[in-house]
Image 1 (cartoon, each protein chain N blue to C red):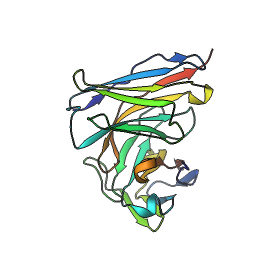
Image 2: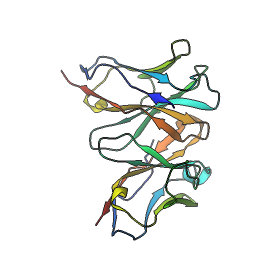
Image 3: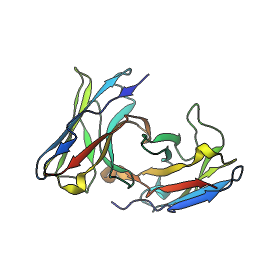
Length: 111
Length: 119
């Protein structure tokens, strides 16, 4: 199955807001409100930060927010901090056959 | 608190079978509100979903691995397992054991284990 499309890298200065896009098709992102986002620091396991497009798990900063329009989901990080420097992956349900597909990943750099 | 811990050989020879287990601590493995899944990550690359299994043994696998992959669940001993046959260097990756919600997001992850395919 094809990975969802994310920009390879996004950067911003401390305190700024950045947005990461995740583009799929009507068979995955566009077809279901079942997009999730993960943060991964080097050498660590991914951590869930957004689920069902725009919901935050307990303990996740409200600086992280999610949205979706058509076949593209977005993750916004407001008030960028040094510890937000990491890789970010989106994921979506893609139907009973494929089940789950991940995005290609985006490296966030804090300047 | 849920804890997942992948275990298995760190080195597998090409054409052989990769086998990993993942004991589940701190939460019921028979929880009907969750699936259990495996995800892998080749060195320096992105995440790839391998497969998902429900407590009753029903499983779904990645189309790209279908035919080589199988998963099982042992509710008595509280572990899940992964088997991947006929491995090649392309199967070299960190393998993660995860819990997946019925809404398909992965809410708990093991620390991951690196499996290298090499002779």
